[in-house]
Image (cartoon, rainbow, N blue to C red; front, side):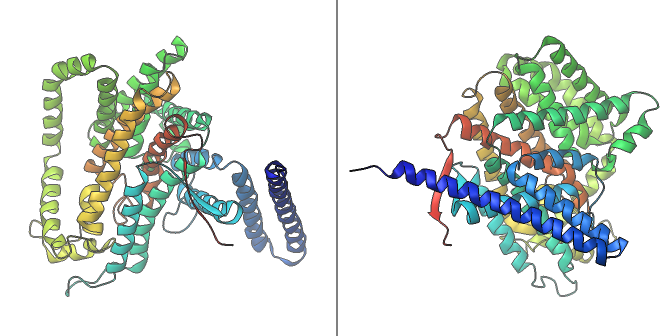
Length: 473
């Protein structure tokens, strides 16, 4: 019997290529027609909006072919590009939503099947997303009679932070298929951090630093990942030229000079960086790790106790706030009280005699208050799965960049957990860091998604995907 599978596959491939060409031709034709009409009938102000729309269409067309370029824009936009919409909506948020739309549309329209990465890190995220949606729903109920709920836009904004952050992880895990893109975003992060640190150290260059970078956007997550990934590549990537490794070592020293000497009072910088680098050393060499612990335990205790003593008011008020929030959350401990609502309930529970609104400055307390114990369990479950994935990958990936990335991501994971304790850096609270914190807070989700990319390449089968039933046309 003749075998028609090969001609059939070729026909399908030919039809798919033709459909893409027709789609591109249709887009180009529409753009040209829209431009011609705009020139004759629109005012200059309306014309600028049309040009912005055309730029968006052109960008979407490029991202259809190279979605990984969106990650480059996210990293650059997180530290440099001004807000692109109201309420501090920024380029990283817009880009993640765009990449999610492209990914989902491609599966539904072109592939006609849902294909997900076969990774144990996905179930906790799906569960976290489901719990968050439930929490948003119950957040519409009044939990305290003498206080109103947060406005709907604030609640929607809080949910958006969770969806965009989780979405960034999904996009990286599914859209990045070549390790070269992991190399690109890693070296871009190192490059951004190197320029920022250099401008902070050189006298008189602070105005240039403010011109290039949005310093208020460079938060705890940035400092959790930039020094850690730089140190990991310097220590573990033996394929780098010795001069490059020396340069990376100087960058790490510069990063600690900026974060400790210049900005010692800001604990979210140097504490997260120290945690990340310490984990890299520990997993690279247990002997070094034990030696470092023995030598550094007393200085570390002194440094931490000194840091707490120098900021005792902040520490004590935060602890008091957490104890008050524990009482507030008891009204709905399983699913929380919905997004941003607790901020409006706090005046009912005076802190130090003052009936004022306050927030926790802590990601874990925020998660419990907004999505309950179930939300926190899903979040911790996700981090545990990532830790186990890193341990599985540690000796399974080849030496060089991949192994250094795994070690750096392990350190970054712990540093991110520390950052969440020091502030709402990982999932910014809308009434504290807000959307502005998503700019670099999303870096953690992107680079943790890189672990799943390596899982696809080195641990899973050839495709690394979990195939599901085709989508009905």
